[in-house]
Length: 238
Image (cartoon, rainbow, N blue to C red; front, side, top):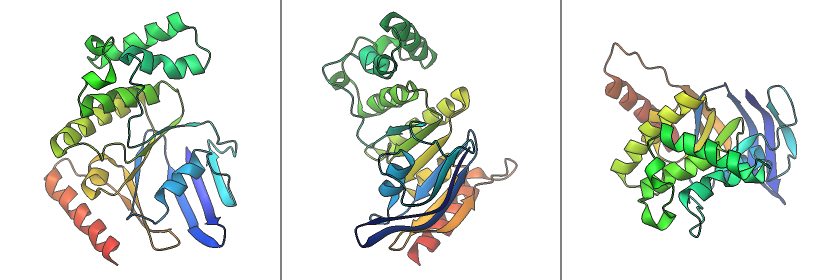
C-alpha cells in the first residue's frame, strides 16, 4: 500500500535520515521505533507531506501522488475545548465539504458503534485522558484517509489506560480496515500492536532492522512477545 524507497533528508548541512526503505501492506499496523533524535518525526512529516522530499520516493498504491492520503494524529489529542464531542468529530467532514446534517448522522453512527454515543454532547474537559484519545482517534478516522500516522499517540496515558486503548485501537483497525504507521519509543507497545516493526537508529537515522511479528496461537503468546521485546532491546543497545 505504501512504499518508501531510498529516502534521505537533511536540514541544511545536517543529514537527518539516510537510505530509508519501508513497506506497509493494507490493513497492517507497522511501528517505527527508536530513541529520541533519530529522525522519527521528520520521517512522519515527510510521509504526511508537511516536508517536501529531497531524495528518494514515497508511493501509495504505486502512485507518487502521496500527499493528502494520510491522517496524522499527534501525542496531544488537540480536541477543541469549546466544542462538544460531536462537533469535534464532525470537523473533518465539514472541512471536506460534507453537509452538516449528513456529517452529524455519520458521526452519531460511529459513536454508537463504539458505545460512545452518550458522550456526544459533553466537552473534552469532562472526559478522562483515555476517553479523549478515543475521541481523537475517531476524529482522525473521519478524515477518510488511506493511512493513519500515529505519532506517540498513546504515550501520555497511564499503563492501564494505555493497555485498554491498545485493545480498543486493534478493534478499530479490524472493524474499519485501517492501515497504520505508528511512531513509538515503547517496545512493548510496538510488539503488541504491530504486524511489522522497523528499528530506526544512528545519526543520521537509518533502518537497522525489520522485524515481522508472527505469533503462533498454539503457543504462549506473552512468552513469544517477550522474546520479540528482548530482541528489539538488544538491537537498540548496539
